[in-house]
Length: 115
Image 1 (cartoon, helix red, strand yellow):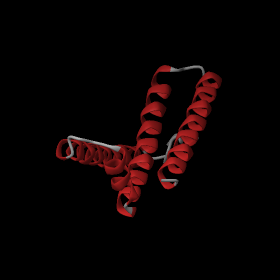
Image 2: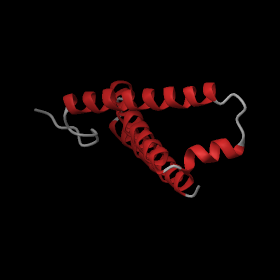
Image 3: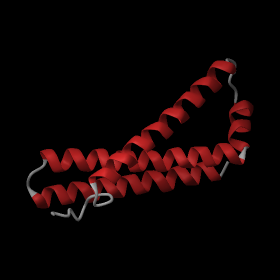
């Protein structure tokens, strides 16, 4: 059995499961935000701030951020391993993607918990 050093979990079934679960979490988050916009047609800062003042919304948003990072990494890793054949180039691009995802994740957590 060949193990890929850059795979997210080292197991295709786990990668598939993480991608599907993260997609469900992201869909639930998107539907919740959409419903919030529909039921609050006159959105203002106070309403938006009130939504994110709740700890449960912060936790849901954090879960969505983590799901987005995991989902994006598995998707990018799959595409890169399929289409970028030179190994050194693929590793460089993967490192750049990981650094960007970590930066976005830390930035999102900072924004989320500073409200």
